[in-house]
Image (cartoon, rainbow, N blue to C red):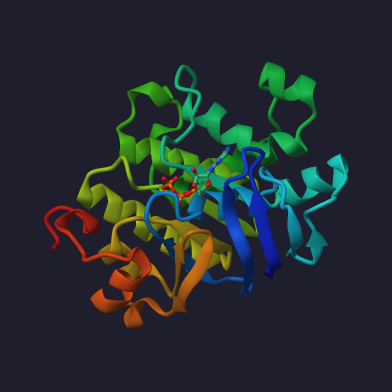
Length: 256
Ligand SMILES: Nc1ncnc2c1ncn2[C@@H]1O[C@H](COP(=O)(O)OP(=O)(O)OP(=O)(O)O)[C@@H](O)[C@H]1O
């Protein structure tokens, strides 16, 4: 369970990223967060991962208080939280296998990871993660030789190899073409359903939010302005979240 109580995040320049947010996200839920640019979606994700400190309020992940956690406690929290980014964040010049292994680094002593001395069990876990996203045949390919969709799948496998209880994805399909975006969202949904990993995905395409959001959270100006199932998030709801009429750019091209 992820719980935010009265969480406010004020950046050093005075900008308020989150404004008194209360949220409870039960284990295993698939949550899509929507909102215009600047609404606070990334801040929410980075706060849950402890990358952005909260100014006031309380945030717990699996019962552990994130604010004020020691370095050691923070490492323990982060080791259970997988992150996926719009730009994939792979090390391009090395193999898919090495990239996925990096997901397990928190559990592998530095000297072994430096020389690539993986145990059979660690390799097995990496293969299993790659199988889950259907690209095990690319295990020894250099990351730079993969398509965007394949790179995002490697990033998902890297997060999975961490054996996370929570998966946070910040605009994971924003750089992908529409069919690939669908496939990557389906991968995340399947993994959520098969493994029960709590998943929070920031999206800006509202049709994807409706299709995949078992729960949709709408944000505006750092506050939660909608919280309900995707099936209830009709155009009027999105217009109220965005504070403006919808445009073609709000849907995945070709699906409006
Ligand atoms: N490191 C930072 N320092 C100062 N202000 C920031 C920082 N990061 C974000 N902000 C501000 O906090 C507010 C929320 O930004 P955030 O990135 O969370 O929004 P978002 O909904 O994810 O938008 P986008 O999709 O454009 O990233 C914005 O006003 C933004 O300018």
